Length: 114
Image (tube, rainbow, N blue to C red):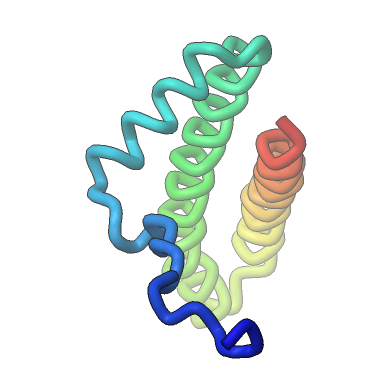
């Protein structure tokens, strides 16, 4: 009977998956990891920076939406100086949003590396 498998040994208990643990357990694990991390301060500053960039990007989107009406009004009036002014306003808003987008991407990559 040495060639028969031992039926008494059952399957090994499965490890607890992330989906099975509670949100509180997951947050406690993250908090514990951050407490002992040597790069905690830099990580917190990077997180605050990305939140600030996201808020500034949202404000930029609102400005871009507000700019839309004066631009089309200048087109409808066939007002060349007004049109050129609105193009300059657009360039400023778009440039700011571009800088914020690059900053957000850089901060995301910085957070992933830490």
